[in-house]
Image 1 (tube, helix red, strand yellow):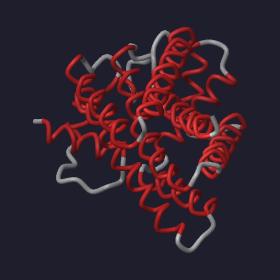
Image 2 (cartoon, helix red, strand yellow):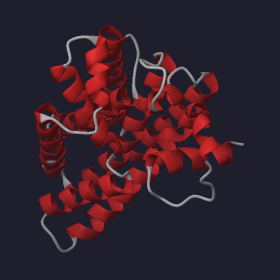
Image 3 (tube, helix red, strand yellow):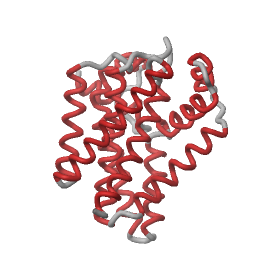
Image 4 (cartoon, rainbow, N blue to C red):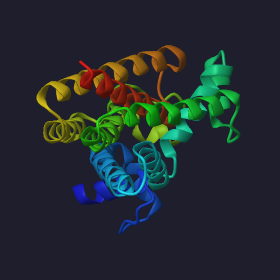
Length: 249
């Protein structure tokens, strides 16, 4: 059962081949969300490996960019797409109905374009300013924690609409899923960072998740898949900023 749910999470969040592809597994996505942070470990480790390999032949900034591109390729840009849609929706929509309508539109607007540009620039600049030995660590942590944010929001908030991917996660996760996902995050922080840095990363992850959740509840009385994707990207960037502040203290 747990292996099936792990493969469901891996299939949903990445383009990696899995030994199952049935559509019915999507209905178990809420339970599979327990393994979202573990998928984040896989994505983050893959990005970290890409950085280490590229850095042997390229400048640090170019290697970081390569790692960011590789991670986006590995995940089909799922979270970046949600980030863009959320900015379009919240930027141009004043009512809940209009915001949800804009988010559903497959076309990307000015808010979405600018958001993604600033997102990539933020990741690139923040990571490039870190010491070499810290970059791969925070890549793993950033991707793991950002997927935990999705799990936490799904367990906390109801779906903002009756259909869509957010409905499959929102309020479908429970205590068991939160325990598994949180344990994965804590173990990742324990092994990747110093105790002080791990505590800082944990606090920042919780704070960003809380602030995003409160905003989504205020604007939409719930959460969508795009909102989850946006929150995950906010968490990732906030952690890279935390890393930079921490190493300069």
